[in-house]
Amino acid sequence: MEGTAQDANLFEVIRVGGLATAVLVLAGTYVLVRFTTSALQGVGARWADKRLLINQVATLLRFLIWLVGLGAALALSVNLTREVLLALGGTAAVTIGFALKDLAASILAGVIIIVDRPFQVGDRVTFGTVYGEIASIGLRSVRLVTLEDVVVTIPNNKFLTDVVSSGNWGALDMTMQIEFFIGVDQDIALAERIVGDALTSCRYAFAKKPWDVFVNQVLHENVPALRLRARAHVIDVKYEREFETDVTKRVMAAFQKHRILPPALLHRSVDASGPSASAPSATLPS
Image (cartoon, rainbow, N blue to C red):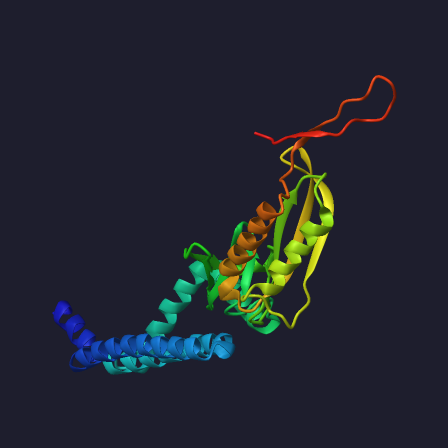
């Protein structure tokens, strides 16, 4: 008799006739989310200057669609009586009690990220040893896609204590730095001019923003060297690799053409008749 009563109570709570409809609603919600994401990605590819805004709109729409779909499926499959609501509330309270610390910290961090905006969807950021583009910002975690196309999921609460740096902070363009090393006895002015020409002629460079080439002497692989640090803006963060490759190929080809050599060990000999040094000879490091 007790089993029969429990079965009857279960049938009173669950709408058996609405289960199939609830499953269809969830399936339709999934299809709608996939369609919306695909459509907005197409729009973002067509209007590149609005891509970051469209990514943010897509994130919000996916969240709202899932929220409405899950609510509709629950309403169709469960009789939300006073007893059911109390039972759901008690279950939720126990579940939240076990995971309150980490979940609350992640949700709080998610709200802080949205309000304070240290970064946003589409930004290129560095977090610890991970570098890539922010793909999505959720209530619990942030998903980041590296340049190797690896998806990294980071809990939001990590951003409350650890340092994160944003390369473009909401803009499509981003500052890029590329380093080149030459021997200390090479033509500095010519090398600097070659690097500058490569920056200004690159089709991925953002010509409306300034560029610079900084020169200083360093030890490169235990050999004295001149470092030329090129700094310019790439027109769109998605062309980061193409920008670096194009500039590097142009600079190295020009260095080879004008015989600008890499860092090398310099051997100087002193003439016995006086302190004047003879011309140095160079040995490339192995």
